[in-house]
Each structure stands twice: as structure tokens, then as C-alpha cells.
Length: 387
Ligand code: SF4
Ligand code: FES
Image (cartoon, rainbow, N blue to C red; front, side, top):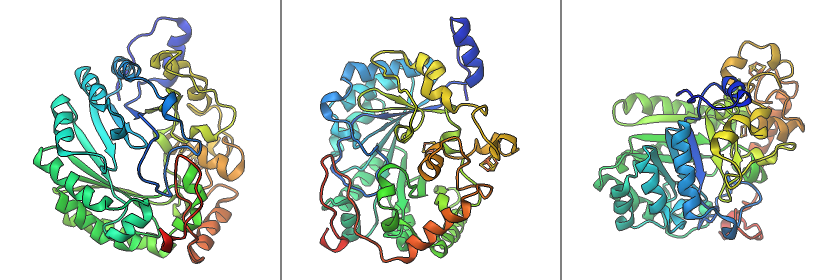
């Protein structure tokens, strides 16, 4: 992590000491438009409309400010970032100011020519999401026809262009049994890294918790499969494996700690400490149209609110593990207890930890209900068989 360069005011200097570092990464949600409708979408429940999106010049200014602040990596995300016709102009500036650029894409709108142009303009890395490696099931999960074949093409182009590739495979009860084939698929595409992340249940995914929740036995099996594959594929592909919080013994250090390492800019320029922060009450989100990224990072009310340890209650307040997990996830604590300062229920020291575990176990035993698909406009839920 890199230090912040000195700031001008006494107040800002004190705040800089409190946060102590610049964010390593900035997630740029260029647009919420997306041709896919995944039931575990991590975008907020209320999507931002295209007519509120930052302009090309405004995104370019965000890139310059990010570099000035000390950000190292820009994750160009969405929705589907390739739905922005000016992606090239944004990548070009990000690259010129020295940021490492990662395109997080579902791939279905890309062409080889466009990818080659993005590479020429400085794009460093592609992160390709997949729903499953079974064509029909991938189509059912994303409600998008022919997506998997398109992803095979994109993977091939990334390799032909000699770019690094990460395959991102969100895992849940509708694809979990295919994990060995998903890993093989990533190896065949030439991915150097795979993210096998069990779906986390915030925002839209919470609406589909029962449809997506695997059983404990399935989760344990995936851990064994990943361990075996890690060993077998040493030097070929690295793994990021995230278990669902509901079956974890200890919480994850969500966002690497609130206001410590990540900034998230929404399509309309609101700056969030985490992608789900809008689910929390009492936070004021500044906009890059009104303030600089630096001011927002250091002094923004939403960033200050849960930064550090002052806000904690027991058991976190006096727990030595707080230095490592920062009390877990604020969004999950709020979603499950109504108070974001409570301990994350994923922690075994939470008074509701057992209830939390039980929710998952019961949900996974029930017949999976129909997906509630993610769309810009509300749509009727379709039964999986109809999709
Ligand atoms: Fe982490 Fe809080 Fe649990 Fe301690 S009590 S392990 S700090 S979540
Ligand atoms: Fe917001 Fe964990 S998702 S803090």
C-alpha cells in the first residue's frame, strides 16, 4: 500500500493520518446497463439510469484524480463496461496516467477488433465472468442466449493478444456441481487466475438467497476440489476461493476494511466505500461532480463512518482479531441485525451466528425457487424451466 502525499489543511492532515494510506484499487462502475440478468448481481437494487452517467471527460478526470491520489489499479466494471462506447477513451487516459487497468466483463458485447484496440490503448488485464460451462445452464442463469460460446471466443482472443486473463466464476447451488469442469474450462482458456467465489448475499442476491444457497456438504466438497486443483495447477493457474459467509467460522475482512483500500464510483459519480454501501442508512455519499476524489477519500462522511475501530461495539471492540477482519462486513451486519455497528453474524461470537447458519441450512434443503432475474426494469420472475 502506498502513502498519501502530504495534504494541505490541518484537518485533512489529521484525517490522512487516520486513514494512513491511499486506496490501492478503484472500482469504476462505468454503467449499470448489462445484457445479462444474473440473479446474484452485485449492483444495487436501484440501478442508475444511462442519462445520469458521468460523461467521458468526467470519467477521464476520475482516472487522473485516482492516479494523483495514489491508486494503483482501476477495475473497469458495470453492469457491462463494454456497453460504454467511450471505453477506449477512458482506458487511454487511465493508461497514460500510469494506472493498471483491469476490464471486468461478461464478454458478450466484445469483438476481437475492439479488444485489440483496447490493448493498444493500454488495457492491461481482462477478467471474464462465466455463469457455468454447460451451455443450457449458463443460459438459464444469465437469461442470455449463446453467452458461453461468446466467452470461449473472448478467452481465445485474449490469449491470441497475449493478455493476462482471470476467469471469474461465481458459485452457487445452480452450478456448484460443475466446479471441476469450470476449473478445466479456465485452464483451457489459458487463464492465469481463477476466482471461485461463492455468491455473497447482499443487495439483489439477497432476493435469491434460497435459489442460490448451496448445502454445507457442497461447500466443503468445493473446498476439497479447489485444494486439489491448486496443487495440480501450481505454476499454471492461481486460485482465489471465497466461501459463503453463512458457512464460514470467521468473517472475511470485507473490502479489506472499511475506507482502507477500495473506492467505488457509481455510474453517476457517487463515491462509495463498498459496492453495497447504499443499503446502509445514515451515510452521505459525495459525488465526483462536486468534490475531488482526494477530499472524498480523506474526509467523506461515508468513508469516515466505519473507518478504524472507534465505531465498534463488543465483541469486536475488545477482540484481538479486529486488526485482521475489521469486524467483518457492515452491509451484512445491517442486513441481518438492522445495525451496521453490530458484529458480522458470520462471526461465531455474534449472538445470532447460529440463526444465521440455520437460515443457510434450511434454504439449501428446500426446493430451489424461481430466480428473480436482474433487469433495468422490473420483470416477472421466471421459473428456471421457463428461462
Ligand atoms: Fe472479528 Fe469481531 Fe468476530 Fe472478533 S468479534 S473475530 S473482531 S468479527
Ligand atoms: Fe459492504 Fe461488506 S459488502 S462492507
